Image (cartoon, rainbow, N blue to C red):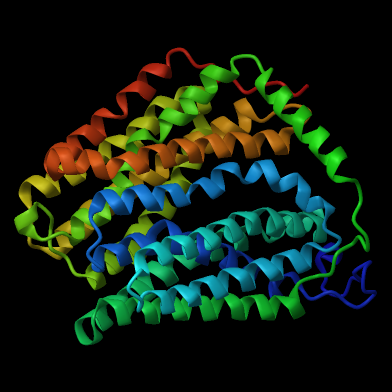
Length: 431
């Protein structure tokens, strides 16, 4: 255990470094909080504030573009003399923007201000992902990275439990007492204070940088980035692979966006009429647990049979459970237990199948001279597919109604199923 003892020295400071458990869990909690605030919590807030579905889907989808393009500016973060300072600054920035959003909800032009501030949160959060992962890698040995990898995932997903399973339930409780604007202002003020507080804590807890001054230049970094992109575009079969990546999330992006809004909408409008508290409880507890269980079992299944043989099953597992929403929209059941069980099954399938795209990018797209950078580019295309489908989902739902929209969501999986016959699934050989 000598390689993971807490009393090693940081080259930059010469002082004993904090034990990894003093900062790894909180670092990835701070990575998850702004992401889920933008990706999930904001949509439920807009629904409570009376924003139409098509506007919610369009604008929250556009906010996801920050995660699409983050790979293009990630190399330039290496020019910063201190990864720690970058991480702390981005956490405080995100916290201040979330707190400012709480104030903006009380103003006449609240919607435009909310989108602008969530845009700041998106840029800070997506850039923070790069800086935090870079700090983790630079500060820990290979053995330490493996030892604490489980803490990463646990606390990133813990942010989902906290935001959806805790703060959204709180918002629902407060909505019934002080109204939606004040309720959600309270929630975003708490999110902002928590994230900024984590930033201040990390100013003390994070290990210092191992490099006292920045290395390289903007011009040199830009040249390397251009070479990374050229090498990516020159990979055999890359364009078919990109189309496959874009289409993989076509159904998921639409259903995962409209699903929570359908649960909130009144029964007279085709929804289930659930309260904010009930939706938070379903997605933040049982739904998240089912997703994590599906992710673990999907990874185990794929490791046993191989990606090529597993891919068809993974795609079906991810998309067939979307029929759950069609059933709910057709039957409009009253029993909350039945709704929770149905959505848990859908989230389990989502987690099980999503593993397929991660492994496709990791094993087929990324290998080569720039493996890490190419994985980031592949992940960007994966996020782009999600964003494009999310942006149009509200307009499609508005045109079709909930019941026919969820049928459309299931049919949206057909193109990627067809492509599995033409895309190379064999793991690529490194250059």
